[in-house]
Image 1 (cartoon, helix red, strand yellow):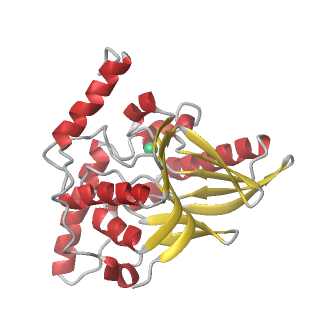
Image 2 (tube, helix red, strand yellow):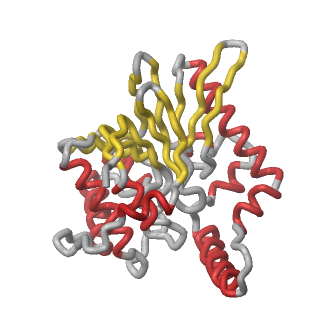
Length: 287
Ligand SMILES: [Mn+2]
């Protein structure tokens, strides 16, 4: 099976370590591509909700796959999000082909592209509180409940449905918030003369042109791997919003692939984050 070579791939909001995360599908997708640069635009590992009882093998495999990309010549850039904000204390670290940053500007065929997660707008956009908990405990439980409902629905021969999408679409506030988020990001990009602004955070895949009296830009959002299963790909001077397609990508699954040789123990991972905080002398009193 031939892997697709892609210049630049952006994924965000994977939320590894939560029930809603579609790690298997993400792994199939990652196995189907060969990116020159991979941008992880925030909320990849959900450190907020980290619990040692839930971190399945498939989630570890995603981490292993990312490490394997970095060791085989893919430039991997991890941009921090709010669910992995603990990593912000380690920002601007570089280990080989792996880089950790809070934001990033790249030049793509003479055009400036601005990448950041997007939670920076939470304080300034009205109604943000409503969705600020996106990926939080309640949301994860909602996804779990939804999986249960869908299990029954499928058994009864009925179609699946998405509880959270239904809630999001019916709550006007949520729709307004998404529009506001997109406009605020795009407006800021125009102001700073960026041609592309690429965010995550709101779990709403998007690719659209924005214009105001000062100019225009393209607003892009890589979506998430909880509900939408999407990524952004830039290749041959063109952006594409890619939706996961099981028929196309599950052929890349590698069931014999073993992860035994890589030791990531969630407890140890958490401990090492703590150690880093202590070493940096930045452990705040409230966590
Ligand atoms: Mn986020």
